[in-house]
Amino acid sequence: MTSDKPASAAAIPFASRTTVEQVEEGLALAPKFDADGLIPCITTDVNSGEVLMLGHLNGEALQETVATGEAHYWSRSRQCLWRKGETSGLVQEVVEMRIDDDQDAVWLRVRIAGSGASCHVGYRSCFYRSVEPGGHSGGPTRLVFTESQKSFDPKAVYGDAPNFHASRPTQSPNMRAAHSNARRSCTLHVCTSCRPPGSPREPRESRAGFRLHEELRATLRESPCGSHVEVRPAACLSMCRHPCGIALSSPGAWTYLFGDQHPGESARDIVECVSLYIGTEDGFMPRERRPKSFRASVLGRVPPFEVGR
Image 1 (cartoon, rainbow, N blue to C red):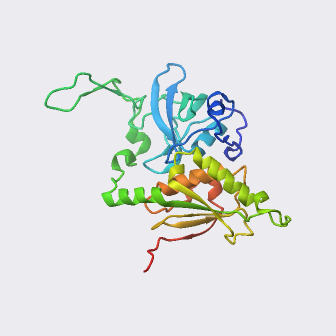
Image 2 (cartoon, rainbow, N blue to C red):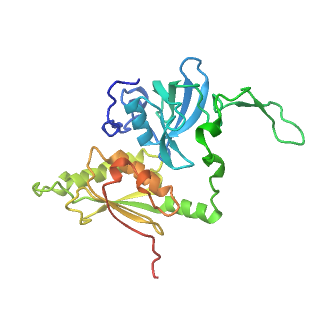
Image 3 (tube, one colour):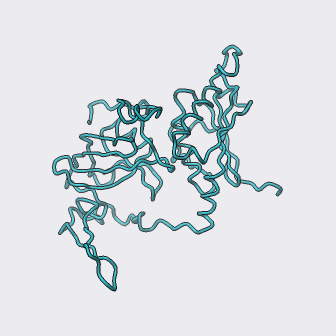
């Protein structure tokens, strides 16, 4: 899958999911991301077929993997994009990428440099223990090591970097409640009056903003996060120099204004951004976590406030 001249990840679009037949029998990549904007990915060794790891991809990680021919993942613990092997040198060269029938799970067959290991603990596979069947009375179910020794010394490779998977803080009940409330009340405002600068005053139904509004309604109907989002038309968001304009809002959360969105191009990135927004405690979206097209297009943001205070 690796090419001499990899394409730009931003130039690799995903198709819209229109019909079951198109998703299951078609020839266009139309991945289905979950409510957190992620898709699971199983990775195996191309020669032995051994399962090496289970990871997750967001839209950017999937695009980077396709564009570069090297496995990229989204770290749920660190909340960032990572190229596998960037620190250890154990880069995963993608020989083949497959997607399942519903396009909601990815399978990578890879060739690995160096020791061929994939696990940050030092083993070849992240699945280096088996679960002993039958269980034991009076104690927890036992685990049995399937790899007798590590492929590399993780301390020599990673130094004192913390194990983010073990140290990630647990959310309090209040944080989980806020998370749930944010999911129930997100509103996506779309300026339906937007049109390219200098273009004639055409009927509202023909304008770019209206077409983007209709496209987002259709896309969100197919998205796992669609039930948590109300798409609302706005007569004008005063972003005339940066059409098309959208805004994200939720009670008790940050409000964001974005410009320079385009029908036929921006819908999937907008849905990915919405999924990130409703999956946070207070709607705050750090620049590095937003889709690439939403890092420069933000026109403003307003911190949470309480009505009546």
